[in-house]
Image 1 (cartoon, rainbow, N blue to C red):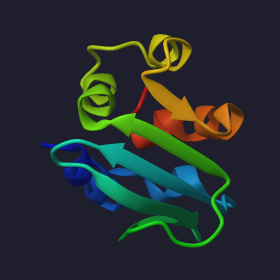
Image 2 (cartoon, rainbow, N blue to C red):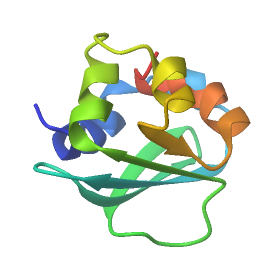
Image 3 (tube, rainbow, N blue to C red):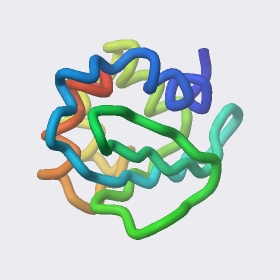
Length: 105
């Protein structure tokens, strides 16, 4: 699985009951093979993923695909990746709220 496939799989992986009352938008800007730009919407107890950067996000995540997948696979500590600049997050507080739901922690 590559980074794009991981993001596109979120709607099927995330449990709707964990999303009740949540309304947020994330932009993922991923460089490298299997990357691209994606908008992840969390609204009405569901996750949807669109290709491209749409609407105004509450959080922007920039990384290379290798780093993101290393975090997803549990090989890289997400906090260390942020502190070393391997992944850039515009609103860490917003990402921390959803990282576990998305499978990033």
